[in-house]
Length: 152
Length: 270
Length: 103
Image (cartoon, rainbow over all chains, first blue to last red; front, side):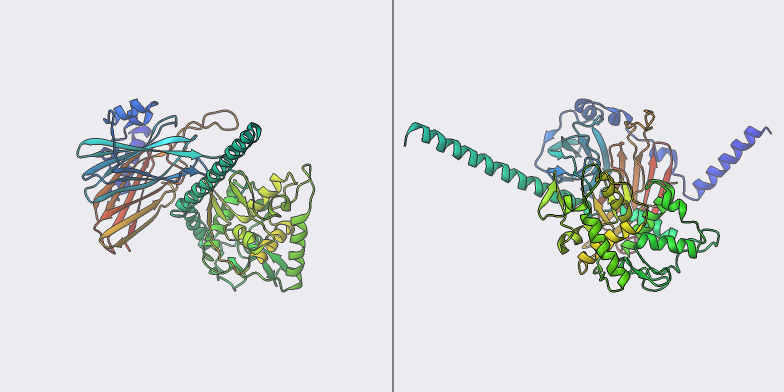
């Protein structure tokens, strides 16, 4: 047995042990990262990649966030849907280099209210996109990003 | 009324409306900032550093392979709960007034046999200081919601307070600056950030009770020493030596002025 | 493996609220270091959260999620003692799973 084969076998065994111990998640469970949607550089491309086309504006979708962010590195956003059978919620930032920040697939018992923190390069509209009963709905809110003073 | 004064009245009316609009806008901005800060409170990444700090505190290290668990932060060996709210204070064994970080260096040296020099000299983002920042997060977190209780009684504590006051008003450097230039008046701000009036109880509490803090701008955990060092940098003063008396004196000045207020550490800042 | 997450889960009135803090750089791939070299993107891109063994959330993230990410959501059902398990995977293939009990 050559050294390389031997090492490979050891590595495989090692991974096998980790997998058995529950440390390594089977690749199949995590193979769904939507590269096309995350790489999209225009809103149209991003929405198309998400299969949303031109989503209808809906009062049942809410972007809960402060009007101003003291720092663009961390902007808290709560994405809320009041629509029945909401299966997916996505957050998109119009003026970021890549629009799509996050997509959340919800289980049947998960309440469609998700809080996350996003980076914003500048003042921009933030869109919450919701897929409910197979249809897409959206709402947007402008969040201003300010420059800080000194220490705080 | 002649045409000129009608014109003037109209102009004044417009100016007044514009001024009111500007004022309303300012208030809206202030409200927005407050809503932003409120939203940050839920889920402070400082918790991640507290966990790291707790592990550092409890893990044997250094030539003596000892943990810091027997460190006396002022309330007896091993007592962490409430200790930070009572610092800086005079310690008999060193006969010095010490803040948290200088006290930690003492414990690292005496209990663990570590050389404090690399900790003093490292940049604030370098690994030795990351340990200090994490320890500060953990220990300050164990005083969260406790009242700040720092009253200079020992002559060395009183001397340290007076030195801190002098440091605060000491004006110099290429910009002819002092701490008081920014923090010596009520109701001032830089851009949208309020500047606390440090000589008063409210302003001192606003400052002292919220550091160490997680800075969202850079995603870093800042200890009070780091914060003070940055104040010196912003004044274009020479950088103070880590845990030097100048920094402890300023901390003593702030902590004593803030005494009675509630600790909110570790904080979260923009 | 990364540093441990902080997971808080509490059940009240038939709803379990789950709050997760993760320790991760979330490097965008758009920044440059002092030598002008681009710092490669390094970010958590997939997350799975389970309550009592049942998947309640699967998320996909891009690099514009903030450093040391925070995620909070609510699930109908759940009770004190139920197990919450969260797994993240980053774009370099690193992964970490942490667990907590509902209080």
